[in-house]
Image 1 (tube, rainbow, N blue to C red):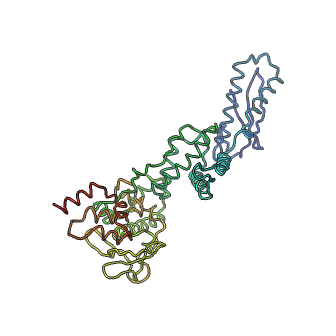
Image 2: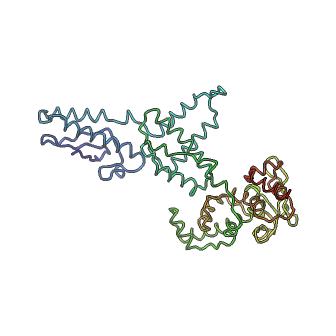
Image 3: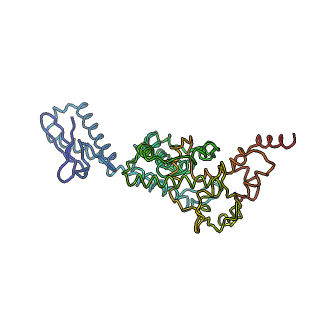
Length: 403
């Protein structure tokens, strides 16, 4: 049986008994003493070294099994063991995932688009680097670890911990899978379960959904209970002390109020943060949206559905405090309110138009016109496409109009 020991210098040595003689050749592998546990290496980069130790063990045991070692002298055994170790030295044959990724980037820079006859731009190359950095931030994996379980964990990390949209997480996965496929075509030792790493189909992206009145009211009526927040934090993998729990509860309450107000006005979150009391004109809000300064006019009312004024600061300055972690906090709100799909700040902008168009009663008012003004859309077609109004909905409108 092959065993391994660590010298004080950090070198790993092989220990094997053949013909009653204990041989202890050294490998070219070195690790820090605190990374050596029960003949295995732990921590970052451990999979490469452990893989090589297993290769050495298999090669030695195979040689002992297939050859009449009793006929070998001690010197011959020593030379054979050293030969096996040298041929298994992964330092000169195997590279880290970072080195493989750097080679992938070099290949991508040389790639020519068949239609444009141009190489990939710096922006595209930068996007590959950004997604790889996310993966390394999540966990410094090696190619052999790219399996279905890691896919699930990484996807949850992107959406739950980092607060990414489902569509954004899907794009990250697609970029990484391009790299994994390159590794497979190069014959590198990548786990074949990398095929499970697939982006999200935009047609089934749950984040594109809007809340209905009942779900929005659930958020409006939510009472932030520290005990519930503590239990949910543990489920999400966080252990909070009392001070951080109090801070989180305060942040969740602010997020709850802002989400309801955002659904009552229907603007983008960046425009939402920039609103001041100078934008308020009675029961409406007027503001210029985006770089093109498109004129928007939205309701600023409180009723049984919308609650914009209730949570606004009308004493001067911004109406709503900037909340850079709103999407991360909405993960908690979603679970506490039992919303069955992923929600972000964008969800509440769409909720505004969806509730007005689909759920408010017909009163003769041009609903689509009200939504267009609030969204800052120039064409009715844009609003219809944004709300997902299909031909069946148009037929219903026509039936009511021409009956």
